[in-house]
Image (cartoon, rainbow over all chains, first blue to last red; front, side, top):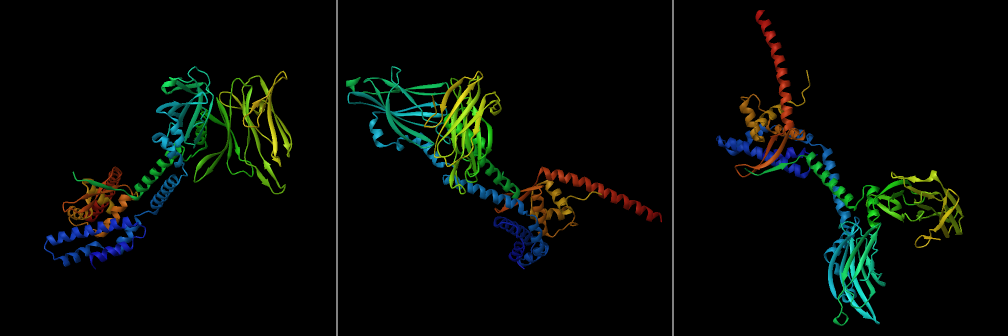
Length: 239
Length: 217
Length: 113
């Protein structure tokens, strides 16, 4: 018998161990045998004789293997494997969007690059880019830009804004923002928008008077009121 | 001192994986990505409409023929919510069909109509629909509510009186109500309204529930 | 007499580890040296003993670089192992004391006879 044979005979009895555990046992046994052989060779033994002598002291490899195998409980291995599978499953569900990672992506995009989710005509309607953020309830109202134009003798203010939850994992609340002109009167107008559960983008066109310095966004809910002024820039002729 | 590398036992490794799994599951629950309880789903519903905190007041299993789930009424200072809560292993607890009714102190009561999915009855060869009316009574003088279900096309008319025995009270003593109407068979068009009654027999205005929003008449 | 919760081999190994952390071959050598070669176990059977103690939480293992540069697996007695050793030592003293007492009384009787 050689060291290698001895080790292999021990390993052949290890049925309950994983590959990593078997490798660890093999390394430990080999290290032990090497230490013993080196000690014998320090005493003057030749290598072959040292190995033979060392193996005599190691004991029956089958018995060693059987006793080692008994020390490894399958219970914890099963628990470990089950937990790993569940973890992998959760991660896969998160990546495939089941966990609303799509919403997370939209929420982050509204924070980091809101203009990337806005059509070009909106961008063209804006003559000053802004970045005014205001908490409204559990959301953030973010004014992205404002513009002004004269259409058929009517002065119109354009406001482009988005809303998203204060938490990146949260859902945006209902998007009821009212608008007032600088005289405190309701500003009439139309607009459009698009949204997901995570972020909402809106464009409002409000009838105002030429030269009005701002319009006011109003959010009101159950007695809580938030107002936010949005500055307007007019061509010199209308200032 | 030479660097040591700890070698964990199977038990330790298993406990570490379990701990990682628990952390991930709890994180998903806390973030609302995978709700472990209907309460967490309710918190998300409250957040979407900015309703403030509500509490569960009533629950029942979803009617026969619906997707499995738990129909629950919750109420708070500003709103009453009726929602079908459903569980799946891939998504956790989620909100199915949901309706809100906003409470307003200047109104005698608030109400909303809720209709979950119907089912097709093979024996009758017709659709069976389940209708609910829920809300809150604001005016302390209102002693009764009368719910009128007018089956315009198919089905049958129903009138239900709700009294003291039917109120569902929260810890603050606010009065909420939930009325499960009889299942309607083959009903294609309907109107539903609610009227409040005072102790002296006078009535409140009628609240029409159908349409895009409830409206007072 | 109380049944031993660990066997003699485990008791001896724990006793050695109570003094210092050791690796496998070192335990074999120390055991032989300290017992004046009375206890010389088959070396391979040490490892089921050590892994069993590890599973019971009485020892924990770590790897550290040996002077030769090779990575060695060392064993360290835990607090649980120390308590277990203390309990077993007391049991052993009690047991061996009782055996010695019986032997002394028997030898005394034989001498008188």
